[in-house]
Image 1: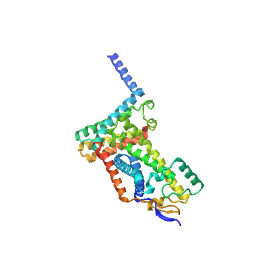
Image 2 (image 1 turned 60 degrees about the vertical axis):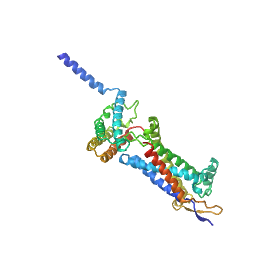
Image 3 (image 1 turned 45 degrees about the horizontal axis):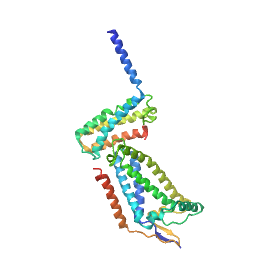
Image 4 (image 1 turned 180 degrees about the horizontal axis):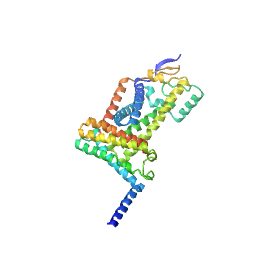
Length: 147
Length: 221
């Protein structure tokens, strides 16, 4: 039992340090994957509100819920050392961490509203909140991502 | 005795000042993004229609509106530049050779900007009307061009405005007022340019607008 506890403790310790010492290239891939999924779901809402595909309330709710759930995800992968490599992230994202966090928080706040509005089924309101959320994407891209 | 004659037809003047307004709107709404984006799109469509109109008007319009009147070879441009350094510069009822160069440059840059804009994916949920019509490589390239080219346009606008102010303040030659009134003093020995009717311009503009409407509303379906 004692041996087991030690083993468990070591394993836990290992997994924590593994996360902290995540390889930069893995962190970059993970945050880009999270962004891709956000982009896929958010783009689907964009296509609906811009009349490029028919509005479907259930699909919009599903997309918006996923955007909300994923909107907190990419940021944990901006780990030390991942400012170099196959990334378009500017070095500012790693230096101006307060400003970067504020931009990430803004996306999460707007995404939460997006999910709320999607649930009402009001397409006009969804369009407006889509714009507000897109602005959160854009402001962060403008400041923290290479063109 | 210099005579006051019409040098810019109404279509050229309306085109010029509408373009000023629309470039300001496009730039501002593009920077703001968010719920201003639909206005960025509309403004861009209007610019595309206007530029297409101006290209056709440059072939069939009034004397001073035609490319043949203000597009010259490098030699004439250099000669004019020299005459400008020495003194007032050779008189031109319409665009001088340097100004003519700027007209063509501006039209090309705006045509590139408006056209690439139709294919942009802003990576923030919005794809322009023709983005789904092209490969992702083309979308990525045109998005990049759209973002770089605006800086070239801004530089040209700055140069253009500086040149107008240079003529006004240094050369004591007001080029801005004639672009509003259409009229200007022409020295002896220079014929008054022939002006075309407004109706033909309206027809060309309507056709250009119809083409752009088809391009963004019907063609992507």
